Length: 349
Image (tube, rainbow, N blue to C red; front, side):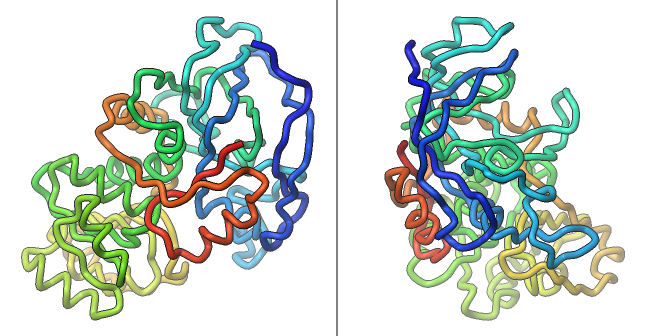
């Protein structure tokens, strides 16, 4: 397949607001050995796009420092972790039969080889991502989904949100018949948690608000509690037996309020801090009940394989809230930051 030398892309050259997103023309990335070149069909947006752009991650030695996900960003950087598209060229050592195949890219950069590796970097953060017409990826990180009935938009919605959700569910050891609590349930990760937990045969209690409650119910939540009210009281009313696993992207005050709601041996899994990163809780509620607080960042290669199996069989149906052209990346990120939508926002290069 012929590929031009240049491509349209959106990149950032510094931290800041949506105004630092620059539509530009750059060279198509050069293929290294072991890599493939993917023509981007759709790229999905994530909160990590906003926080990386803002430098909102802090550093272990200075929580208020401007920083990317895992440290300083190497500018200029093309954002975008979540890519679905087609392989148009392969580097040395990669089988040519991949050309023309429809793929989803695993955006994680891992600390080691092997199925249980930890993500220590991310496409769109530690390497250039999918806010572009083309992106390169290691061949062992592209997954053939040619047979999936899902659209490119739906496939692009999967890697970060559904990968993070599946990582939380696996690390929290959520089993059929258990009761799961999902916070931030109308967001990308939240809806993914609701859908996957429901597909696992668990009872799903979700936390959402106002006009989004109906959509969260539609995604599969058995009960939805309104975060505008007394959350703990509402959860006790619908789950008097308690919660087995909390799947939490909010943190903040919710952790202290929610830990007493866990059953014996319950697990509280945290993968975000939308409600604030300063957390206070009564430690007696932790050790007296053999509870666990588990941190979960994204997914392992094994988790991602499981996710791609779900995608091939269309066992999850990502909800697409809106689609933008690539040159409207700033508007797309502003729409994401307003949190008025349900589901995923995507862009089309």
